[in-house]
Amino acid sequence: MNIKDEIDQLLLDDIELVKKIEKLMIKVDVMSNNKRDMLLAGFSRNVLSHFISINYLMEKKLYNSAFALERIFFENIIKLKYMEPLAN
Picture 1 (tube, rainbow, N blue to C red):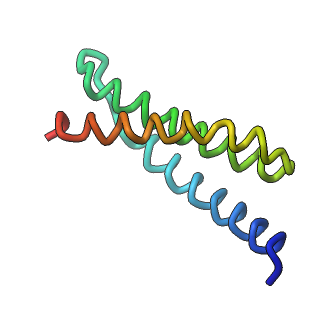
Picture 2: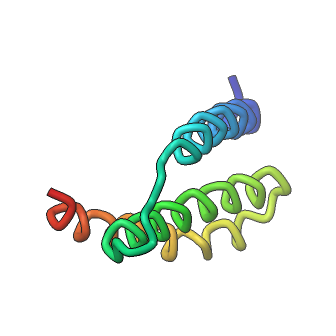
């Protein structure tokens, strides 16, 4: 398998992953009076949005633009990681 075919397959796998995650996220009910949960939901949504955007840009072969979103993507993952202890 060449690199182009591998990237195409990974993009298809990512689309399936996003669909599964969105189905799970719809089931989560966040109370508006719980600021911590609202922040977690916001950061999670940002991660998912950037993941979708990065994959879309990769599909359109806009690799530099996709790479530019990587920093923001990982910043939100780190924010989620630091918020995790507060969730317990």
